[in-house]
Image (cartoon, rainbow, N blue to C red; front, side, top):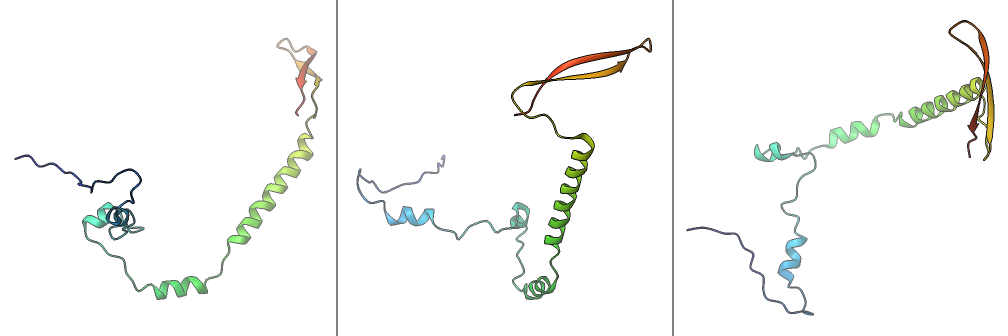
Length: 122
Protein backbone atom coordinates (compact mmCIF):
# COMPACT_ATOMS: atom_id res chain seq x y z
CA UNK A 1 0.00 0.00 0.00
CA UNK A 2 1.19 3.45 -0.78
CA UNK A 3 0.56 6.20 1.77
CA UNK A 4 0.02 9.79 0.74
CA UNK A 5 -0.29 12.85 2.90
CA UNK A 6 -3.32 14.91 2.19
CA UNK A 7 -5.12 17.62 4.06
CA UNK A 8 -8.86 17.40 3.89
CA UNK A 9 -10.52 20.75 4.19
CA UNK A 10 -14.20 21.26 4.66
CA UNK A 11 -15.78 22.44 1.45
CA UNK A 12 -16.36 26.17 1.37
CA UNK A 13 -18.10 28.25 -1.17
CA UNK A 14 -17.09 31.70 -2.31
CA UNK A 15 -18.15 34.29 0.22
CA UNK A 16 -18.44 31.88 3.14
CA UNK A 17 -16.54 32.34 6.37
CA UNK A 18 -13.28 30.40 6.69
CA UNK A 19 -13.75 27.68 9.33
CA UNK A 20 -12.22 28.34 12.76
CA UNK A 21 -10.24 25.10 12.60
CA UNK A 22 -8.20 26.41 9.67
CA UNK A 23 -7.69 29.87 11.16
CA UNK A 24 -6.58 28.43 14.50
CA UNK A 25 -4.04 26.16 12.82
CA UNK A 26 -2.29 29.20 11.31
CA UNK A 27 -2.04 31.01 14.66
CA UNK A 28 -0.98 27.95 16.68
CA UNK A 29 2.44 28.61 18.26
CA UNK A 30 2.74 25.42 20.31
CA UNK A 31 5.47 23.93 18.11
CA UNK A 32 7.27 27.22 17.47
CA UNK A 33 11.07 27.23 17.29
CA UNK A 34 12.73 28.41 20.48
CA UNK A 35 15.18 31.29 20.07
CA UNK A 36 18.76 30.05 20.49
CA UNK A 37 17.90 26.37 20.27
CA UNK A 38 18.87 25.01 16.88
CA UNK A 39 18.13 21.83 15.01
CA UNK A 40 20.82 19.84 16.85
CA UNK A 41 19.54 21.09 20.20
CA UNK A 42 16.05 19.90 19.32
CA UNK A 43 17.36 16.51 18.21
CA UNK A 44 19.28 16.08 21.46
CA UNK A 45 16.22 17.19 23.45
CA UNK A 46 18.04 20.13 25.03
CA UNK A 47 16.15 22.60 27.23
CA UNK A 48 16.81 26.14 28.41
CA UNK A 49 17.38 26.96 32.04
CA UNK A 50 14.41 28.88 33.34
CA UNK A 51 16.19 30.31 36.41
CA UNK A 52 18.06 33.25 34.89
CA UNK A 53 17.57 35.66 37.80
CA UNK A 54 21.23 35.78 38.83
CA UNK A 55 22.41 36.53 35.28
CA UNK A 56 19.84 39.29 34.88
CA UNK A 57 20.90 40.83 38.20
CA UNK A 58 24.54 40.77 37.08
CA UNK A 59 23.66 42.53 33.82
CA UNK A 60 21.66 45.17 35.68
CA UNK A 61 24.56 46.00 38.01
CA UNK A 62 27.20 46.27 35.25
CA UNK A 63 28.22 49.66 33.90
CA UNK A 64 27.26 50.38 30.33
CA UNK A 65 30.19 51.68 28.26
CA UNK A 66 28.56 51.59 24.82
CA UNK A 67 27.83 55.35 24.61
CA UNK A 68 31.47 56.17 25.34
CA UNK A 69 32.61 53.92 22.46
CA UNK A 70 30.18 55.72 20.14
CA UNK A 71 31.49 59.10 21.28
CA UNK A 72 35.07 57.93 20.72
CA UNK A 73 34.38 56.67 17.18
CA UNK A 74 32.58 59.92 16.31
CA UNK A 75 35.48 62.02 17.66
CA UNK A 76 38.05 60.02 15.67
CA UNK A 77 35.95 60.31 12.50
CA UNK A 78 35.68 64.10 12.84
CA UNK A 79 39.42 64.37 13.59
CA UNK A 80 40.36 62.34 10.49
CA UNK A 81 38.02 64.44 8.34
CA UNK A 82 39.52 67.73 9.56
CA UNK A 83 43.10 66.50 9.09
CA UNK A 84 42.26 65.24 5.60
CA UNK A 85 40.73 68.59 4.63
CA UNK A 86 43.78 70.45 5.97
CA UNK A 87 46.24 68.24 4.07
CA UNK A 88 44.40 67.81 0.74
CA UNK A 89 42.09 70.82 0.63
CA UNK A 90 38.58 71.11 -0.73
CA UNK A 91 37.73 69.84 -4.21
CA UNK A 92 36.30 72.27 -6.73
CA UNK A 93 32.52 72.37 -6.74
CA UNK A 94 30.39 73.25 -9.75
CA UNK A 95 29.28 72.10 -13.19
CA UNK A 96 32.33 73.28 -15.16
CA UNK A 97 35.76 71.81 -15.76
CA UNK A 98 38.93 72.98 -14.01
CA UNK A 99 42.30 72.94 -15.72
CA UNK A 100 45.02 71.32 -13.64
CA UNK A 101 48.66 71.89 -14.60
CA UNK A 102 51.57 70.01 -13.07
CA UNK A 103 55.29 69.70 -13.69
CA UNK A 104 56.31 66.09 -14.30
CA UNK A 105 59.70 64.44 -14.57
CA UNK A 106 60.17 62.48 -17.78
CA UNK A 107 62.30 59.36 -18.29
CA UNK A 108 65.18 61.47 -19.71
CA UNK A 109 65.13 63.59 -16.48
CA UNK A 110 63.66 66.58 -18.29
CA UNK A 111 60.85 68.49 -16.64
CA UNK A 112 57.69 69.08 -18.60
CA UNK A 113 54.53 70.97 -17.73
CA UNK A 114 51.40 68.96 -18.49
CA UNK A 115 47.81 70.07 -18.14
CA UNK A 116 44.48 68.31 -18.07
CA UNK A 117 40.85 69.21 -17.53
CA UNK A 118 39.00 67.66 -14.60
CA UNK A 119 35.23 67.89 -14.14
CA UNK A 120 34.16 69.60 -10.91
CA UNK A 121 32.05 67.90 -8.26
CA UNK A 122 28.37 68.73 -8.16
